[in-house]
Image 1 (cartoon, rainbow, N blue to C red):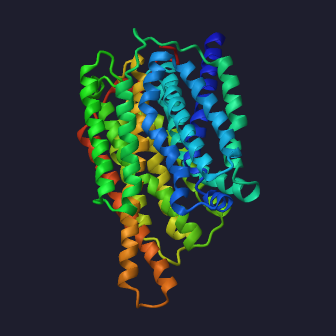
Image 2: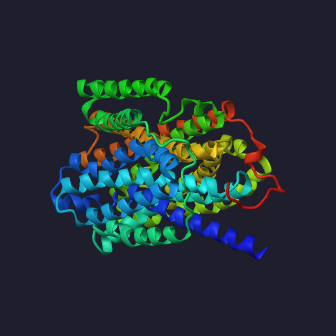
Image 3: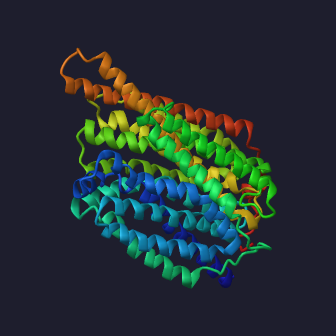
Length: 489
């Protein structure tokens, strides 16, 4: 009995360690947002170049996740995880020591690449460490809470570090954490050697899907400013679509594909990945628009903005810790039908933010609803997306889920930012003679945010419909009351 308890304890230590690594990856998507003005001043960067400090990370991270997930299956999860976290730590140090904007952008791209190998390998280790059922659901609830709450904590931490230390500490903070994770992993992680009967990585497929996704995200980032139907935009979209079509053709012909297309026959995996794409397409806008609203419209400082966002991770943590018990009783499908509607309600509430707003009456209720929806959705969708996936393809399944999250977020933010900018421009043009120009511009900006939130609120409704029409209940994934404890596959 004592031995079994010791084994279970070590598994929870493994979960904490892997969640910490994932927290670093998620954190680095949002932590630099608050530091951008300080970086711009330090390196005299133009606004167009400045956005690449965020976008370079998202591009390489979102584009290379499938490659990272497959590499974990083929070359060993522990080896790929340790390689990823070591590179992530070294590049974080280089980020903090960067001497120019260009140098920082290059290092950010490398940091995203390291995260793309580290994140799916970590989730894959979680999937094979816990048996399918309640114990895995509890583990995935922790993982889901970290994934959902990391962005909000990043805004707070970024504000504190930038205001009281220096923007470089947004990157330096990863170094001691990364060293701790590497040293502890070497002590407590099992080898997790590959169980695949081959080690041939589909490089043509990897180049096509990574390149195609990167060009797609790049096209979506540039389209709002250059025009959706401009020649450069159409060329980029054409290249991205051609690369992704060639990728599908390649996958159907090669002996050992990067993504065995048959994995999409697992109905819950396909439905959950699409649901995740829709949810993050709507949710990423909250962090972007609300950060600007609180600082530029309500006049909050970086630190006060960060503290305001704490509402979301607190509610996520409370929700995510209770969701596994609910899944055990009713399954994940009913939750995935209802929880996206909470997110839609939150976005609809935020679509009414006024110019002279008050945080507790105009913003906080939306944040609370958002936290409830995000906590329940991220936990349940992680379970649905990995339900019924063979152990030797767990890295691929986690890579697909992460890719859906990143690409969904990039697509959603690009589209919603375009809608918001256009709405602001139209408002200012139509009200140019209504009073002082500055007041009209402020009102126009808020009008743009309102329109962005309103469109974003429709994504949750589509996600709920996806859960109704595509997902199927699988009792074995819910964790029946008499199920065995944590154990290795």
